[in-house]
Length: 247
Ligand code: DER
Image (tube, rainbow, N blue to C red):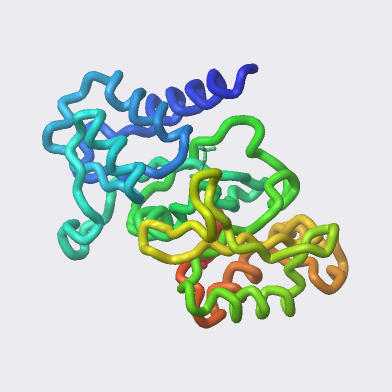
C-alpha cells in the first residue's frame, strides 16, 4: 500500500475510533501523519468551536490554525486539568507500544502533552511497527541544552552509543539550507544516539528470552531513564508504552 494512503487510513481509523464526543482539550502532535489526523477530525463534522487544540511545536500550531481549529498553548491549560486525548505520530513502535519519537525534533513538547493527556493515540503506518525499537529507525533522538551537547555525547558513548559502523552519537545538522546544527522549538540541539542492538522489551527480560543481555544491549525503560539522568538532557525520544513508567 502506498505510504500516504496508509498514513491517511491509520489517521481515519484512529479518529473514528477514539475522538471523544465532547472533548475540552485535544493534543495535536507533529510530523506528516498528524496532518491526516487533523483532516479526519475536521471531516467528523462536529462543532469544534469550544474545543482547545494543544499543539506540540510550531509546525503543529500552524497545522491547528490553518485548519481553523482553536489553538491553546500548553501553559494556558487550567491547572490540574488533563488533555482529554492526544494524537501523535512516531518513528518506530515495538510490541509493547514503546515508541521512538523525535524524528521531527518535536519530542519535548510532544512528551509534555502526551504526559498531560488521559489518552495517547499513536498514529503510524505499517513501516513503523517492529518487534523491537531500533530495528529500522537507527537512533534515539535526544533534546540537549547546546552547551552540554559535547558532554552528553561523550556520556552516551560510555553507555555504548555507536552505530554498527562504530559511528555516533551525532548532533543533528541542518537540512540543505542550514549549515551547522538545527535548533528545536525550545532553541536546543538534537543529538541522535545510535545503539548497536535493538532495544529489549520488558517481556524479553521477564520471559527470559534474552538471558543475560550482552553489554551495550538495553531495555527500553532502563535506557530512557539512564539518558534522562544525564546533565543537560531535556527530553529523550523514547515514549514507554502503557505498562511503562513516565520515562
Ligand atoms: O518527531 C516525532 O516524533 C513525530 O511524531 C514524527 O517523527 C512522526 O513522523 P511522521 O508522522 O512524519 O512519520
